[in-house]
Image (cartoon, rainbow, N blue to C red; front, top):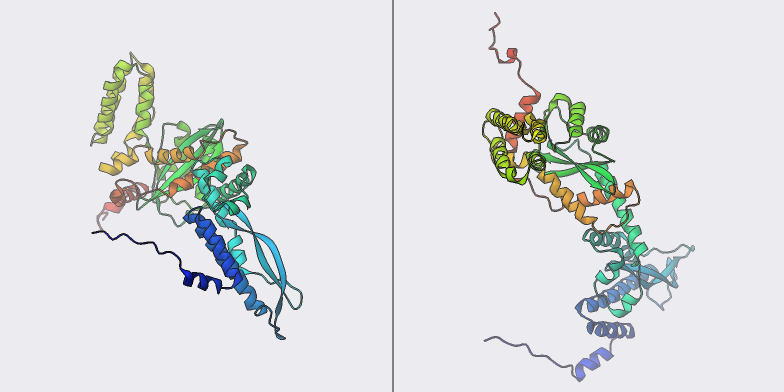
Length: 435
């Protein structure tokens, strides 16, 4: 049988005990009791404010001695109180803090006040809410209930204050992303893609390390996915320590500029895998509805064939079938067709091959980044675009997991190393064979 707890009413003994407490504590308890009517969180805030005030007083007493008692050897003396503010629930709340001065006239710093007044937490709360899609004008309504009196005295909840803090935090995010040291990262795969917004194109880069971990590594601003923009991004990655001497797999969509820039920066050390999903979409866009299904089925069968040479031959045969009726689709299929089978030629199959033959990992990151800026109605400049994109990329990173098929990554690392350091005929000859 379930026991129902009983409610004990306060008796005269309890009242007598409360009456014996110091006046400051009785006043604090009265505030806490009043806040309890507004909810548990508001009561907790009131209790926390009372504890905070007690901490200030304890720190002043440690520096100046007990209040009202003369001490000839004291190093500091009380100096009234001053107005200040502390961070609380995504807002700044005004408080009174005691002050003290040393005997030579210098202000005594309160470490407890400095801790509670720190604005880092406030800035972080603003960042989290903005990334979650809370508009600047709704931050005050989205804040936790802290009691009517505390909320009435709150500051830093206006649209302009929220915007300033978000700009500051996104500038930090952009600087962090663009300064990441890549020398210590064992990067095996590099994915490139472009994100169009505000009549601009931001080319972003996502790295995959040898253990299958995804890491956003950079972005670059331009108006199109042209070769100059992509080359600048790749050169920046190399300057920050990106290593490719042991081979690198670069996954990108069908943009010619991406592939051209990759070859120019990395040379023959890098292998390019074009996104098969983009290729299928591009071809489908140039076909009538009645022919889309059977053409796509043949493409899927060719791209997934276990023998890359046979798969390539089947894809070329399909292009020949489309030549007369749909020459545009045939030309689109032939463009970069050889690079559709790079992963297969490296001997990679299964789940890892499915992951690396499409640009889904980086498109997923871009999708999360795009959702963070859905409330932006006015893009002021290119720097704003970069700030929001960087913040979205770092926000997406928090939910990253290792790629599907990561257990096959050692196989990919070995295959890339063999490509980057091919054995010459003399390397395979036994000792003394030349004689």
